[in-house]
Image 1 (cartoon, rainbow, N blue to C red):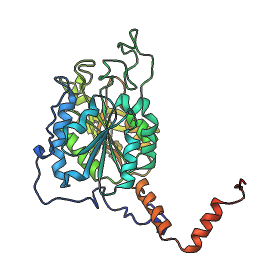
Image 2 (tube, rainbow, N blue to C red):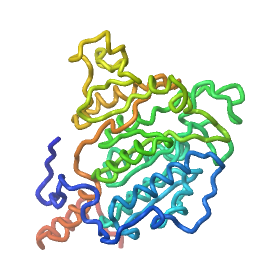
Image 3 (spheres, one colour):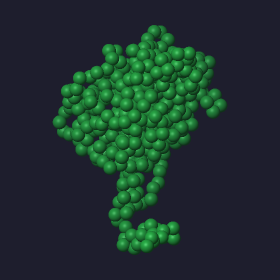
Length: 361
């Protein structure tokens, strides 16, 4: 994708990664360097442990100074994350982490800013903050842990719970039609959208690596198990002979063929996509994954392959495109104001005290 901005806003280089301009360290780092002294307090078996271990193992690869990495969380089990990482962090307020992270990203381009949130925190009270961060393309990374339940408040249904889900707040079954977080993010035209699973450490680390390098808002949904209030919710994707028949991993430039022996594939079905047997179609009819395509329609169609029963679930990077970022554009405007000629300031004063102002005597 190509993008143009006015010359006074061209302080950003659209070819730069999100890591450009952030101080690095020459000292080799290990996972223990990103491990704080706080006791990790999640329920035994919680998927958050696996995600924490993956992130601790991945952060040294960035080569950044720890004081230039910030994790901001909202409210929920996942939001304990800042306590357990030896970086800067903030345990903020319910649903507002993206808003706080936006302010930080705009004011501190020398930081790698991450948001940790859950399906309840991000998609319920925080829904508007999430979609506006995505549409603005703020230079931050949003990790949404989706366990399809409210865990911290002890088991109410969430915005991603299945229809008919019996919980403490829906004893006769939930009537709500759940969000598809990937479709929501793509509908907001997010520039980077990906999904991974807590138990797939290699796949999760690869997605996080690409998210860290992306300049703009990177949205990553992570399927995460809650062993207390929604145990086994993703077991069909992890265990048994059927799991490989359900998972559709994405690799840019590669055909969408999956299954233990490549017996399934994805083809176009009008404006949508569908899964068929590989033996029943010609090779040229199989969709080749293109994460870099401009329009979000293709990635959106991919997101619709995943339904509530997880019959087919796509993982990996759905979309990764380049657009001007909100924080770079804001800093460009600030610089423009600083560089303005004296006459420009007079024009601004005229605008501020124009015909719609009056003097009270």
